[in-house]
Length: 103
Image (cartoon, rainbow, N blue to C red):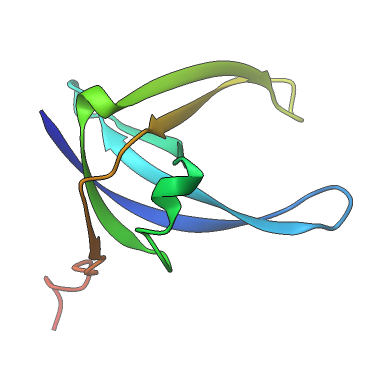
């Protein structure tokens, strides 16, 4: 089964002031709820992507999801989800359609 997701870059700054970008995406579960995930891709697949954002497709059997409970600064517990993609099938430029319904 193929999955198609849009992957974006999010700028992160560490406590030490170091800046880096992580890949993020949104998945929709069977109940229709949008779930935000970090996206991890092996180094040998990274060269296929180039500059983000991109739309990528992959086989579900070439990916898995991990979850981890973390304590937030506000004292609440949050779930971090990471989508690990072992092999990418196709990469296309992301096409923003968010303003298509407006004139």
